[in-house]
Length: 225
Length: 212
Image (cartoon, rainbow over all chains, first blue to last red; front, side, top):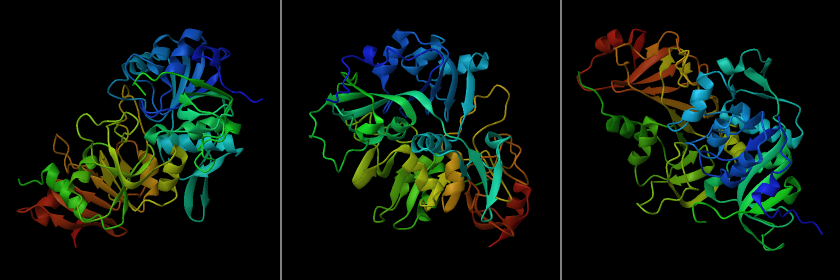
């Protein structure tokens, strides 16, 4: 019997190793797998490379991971926010490496990793600081930049409901990076609001098929859902 | 000197968005355009974080932390709206499916180069988000910005001194003084605030302007 259900967030992230590349879902706090990130903080892995849209908010979640000096490098599109002071201080002190990526290139690099694409030419970023040193090519009269996929050891994402095969549905704009991150990691770990019996998710509306998911854990969401 | 207020600027942009358009409104000033879209017109607002058919802010107490816009503020979804993941969202931009995006800017050049993501200062923390994808992707790129910096320098320039967001991407500029089209033959003024003449605007702007 296939059973991807894990009893706790702690058990689900137990084998994240030092130096791992970890995709973390979410756009701001929507879709942020806060309980998995908290478990990762307790677990103690160091020297990680974190890939996500932002670089942490306030003092919790990813920001707490940064503050505890567990992160060597962050790959993201929008680190600067009104409440990103933990990242800001580390960056200004030269204590964290930043790879800034336009948001669409970030998404497509993650998607490409999951889809087995070796690299791709994108018009985004051509002629800018973020394309410096990268291969370019003119295709049908337009200029493109070569971008490479982002493969990861682990993905931590949040979905609304999942079953023991790992099929997932999401909720509203909390979907964001979840479906593509699930495809791009060797081990995808999902926190869901509810684990449902196999067969209760309509196959027509499953967003992430279980093949992309290794572990599912139900957590009581902090916002009451 | 007369100036368009921010509300007048937003209303002016809204007037130019046609029925049926799919539109992305950038963070900051452009977000306010949503409040001025004519009620009779069906316009689909896209938000980079995965919603098409975005509606206005919810009533107090009805906020949902899972339903936010690119500025991470709570929003609603219209009947007929849809949700999608980030690769699809940016495919809508890069793939040329968006009719219009409206972005803020530090500078726009005569050639339509846009600078809006980074001041280039040594201690500035850079953040790019979706700006570069929107700028190269939307069929029409509108910029909405003050005409002059706080120190009175034109933000419409011969060549951008700030780091570029995208080359030759801007189609139209809405400022507090004028509406200006970026054309292959140069900048063309299509509207000016009452009481301002082309000569005075030309003097403030410092790059060649033609009257439509």
